[in-house]
Image 1 (tube, rainbow, N blue to C red):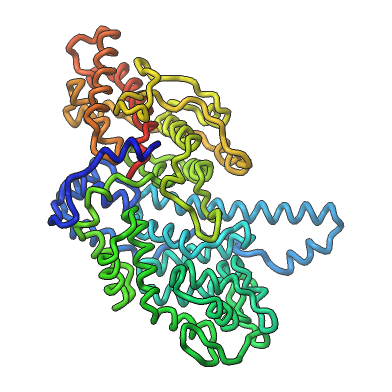
Image 2 (spheres, helix red, strand yellow):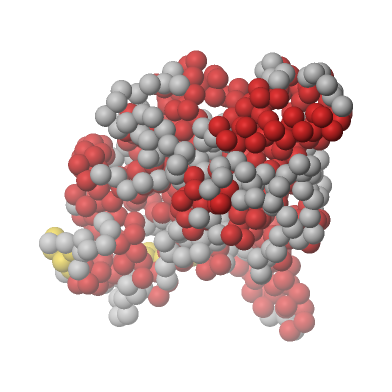
Amino acid sequence: MVLGTLLLLGCSVGSDDPLVWETRNAEHLLNRAAFGASTAALERAVAAGPAAVVDGLLAVEPWVEEPFYPRKRLDGEVYQRIMSLPVKERNEGLDRLHDEDRAQSLDFLTWWIERMLAERDPLRERMVLFWHGHFTSSLGIVKSSYEMVHQNQLFRRLGLGDFRLLLREIVRDPAMLLYLDSASNYRLHANENFARELLELYTLGEGKYTEADVQEVARAFTGWGAVDGRFSFNEGGHDTGVKRVLGVEGELDGDDVVEILLAQEACARHIARSLMRSFEGLEPEPARLESYAASLRTDWRIDRFLRRLFLDPAFYRDEARASRVSSPLDYLVGMAHRVGVTPDSRMVFAGAALLGQRLFFPPTVRGWEGGQGWATTSALVLRGGFAGVLLGRVPLGELLGGADESEPEGMQEQSMASGDAGAGMQPAPGVGLPRDISAEVRVLQQVEWRPRLNLTQRFARRGAGSDEALARALVEELLAVPAPPALVTRVAEVLQRARAERGLGEEAWTSRPELCEPLLRELAHAVLSLPEAQLD
């Protein structure tokens, strides 16, 4: 329903054309390589030029200082002491440890989101999110936030560098080993879970290996595990026999397997395809994929791969721009940047979880499905509710209770899906929240949010005096897609009708902030609830 209506909003640059650097291309880059951008940021990007913008995205801080946690990992002696207590005291002690670990996880994840909101190394944080969905681990299985934080920082440290080094580190990563049952992979009973996902999802892709390869790789990784949050090797549990993996034979261990995988042409092709699909939102054409895979194979540098991709005119082709349904994080963080507010990071964390993207809890070993999977009817309604919260129109309590029934003045009950582009101008009404979200609801209940926002002054500075100019400015600032003319016309009609109802005459809206600001927020809420606002 969503894409069927909105893919009509095409762009004009073909894949064989030279890169013409203008606002729409700059916005496309910052939507995909960062988390959206304000109009001011777009103007700076256009003035700087594509090479300077891309190099700026790649010029990340040499060191990222993470929050310090007094108890970064559960002390084994403390745990054993709690387990020796009577049942009631033991349960209370375990609940306390669980609460402490959950608080540590929330603290770290909201710090991560704060970096997205503050646009601190946005491409680095984009790559952390990418690797979190590629080398998947889940706190629901790992059970300890310490290992998950360690893995997240590993992605932050190496995610834009040498993929070979990242792969060598991830096969020793405690969270990964715990997530894929490496503790039960030993000499007399090889567990194939880690081996299968390493081959299929992380390096080669489907059909590039045999079942015999899976079995032999599992043998090579026997004895590899994690103890007290660190990689451990159980020499007695390791199978020292001869193995044969992808045609290579010897007394192979896990490190040998990594080198064998990196030597396969399928490995560079699989990683290149994953990166291109993630950033472009489309399946790459075979010849183009082979070219990118070949360049990646020369040095395995992710930063150089991305620099080439972001300066490739084909990255900005018609079918790639404004054609992807935003993930919940992209929607919430990008919306904050376009609106010009910095919401409480707990609100964004919990909101993304309610919309289906719960950090540290990917739903499957394949990560998040993404794409049109984000665009369910209930999710779109809930997104509209969060837009109202961000603009200060919907109290969080009403969102959580599904009670907001307000509609902007002059809006009719029509839908973009009906084919009348720009006709549906009502924000989402009250929503029914997903089940089993008690933790996220508790987080949201702690947040008090009043946006520091003045849309009236912003558009006054832009000289948007007439109804038509004000409507165009509003739509252009809020959407990541080109402003649909019919939508601009619809917003201008609402402004004209409201002008007559309020007896404003020919006076500019921006000269009457007490009338203008509430109406602009109503209109912004309606625009951000439309299907167009879900695309980037």
